[in-house]
Image (spheres, rainbow, N blue to C red):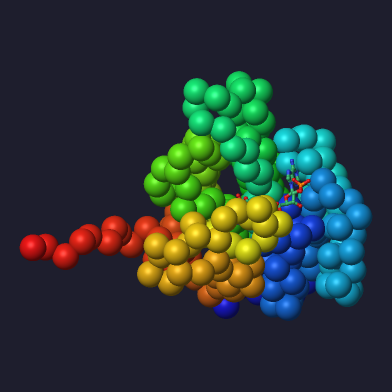
Length: 247
Ligand code: NAP
């Protein structure tokens, strides 16, 4: 089991939703966790619920200086960096013919460039610490297409590919890099989404943030021989298609 006691973890987008559940789960597993988010009030409250193993730090994942500050806070507060969870993400609706170029770029900037910048900044620290784990929160949108969210789909496919390159580059340094691919999860991001999007799944419901958190913590603490791997939790959405009976 990967030892988390005396080491630090950074969870981006940790103020709420999936990130908050992941932060709680990693703190329960023994890590000192920096909840890193652009939402200062909500992030501060989430970090407080973690007790002495939690701390908030302001982070816009697209800003290199923010990254350096947050990783410094993590190591100064809780010890050498062990874990980076690239979870921060945004969703913007708009078909390819309708979405503005600026909106497309913004989604790529946060979801893909922000995660790249996190790995770019954290990898040297993990190397110095003798190894660690990076988990990139992709989506089933990184495994298939969805109408109306082309920028999101492109960003999540990109993150899936970047995960594999990072795994290859960092494996010899003892750094594992995996991606998780949730289907619809009940969070503020999906609060306005029609619940019927889950109706065709073999398990016809939205997942819970805690279910994603359990998988992320498993990857960090138990999956010692997995790197460059994709972990899917989607109620069976990507298992295949229902066919009408043959006549
Ligand atoms: P959420 O409830 O919206 O939480 C995401 C958090 O990230 C929010 O606090 C958000 O702040 C923050 N954030 C946004 N831009 C940021 C930036 N530039 N720097 C730092 N933090 C930033 O979303 P969620 O549903 O928990 O999703 C978490 C991750 O899981 C995302 O990457 C998402 O794409 C992925 N995912 C979600 C689902 C789902 O169904 N919920 C499914 C598959 C994958 P703001 O509110 O101000 O934007």
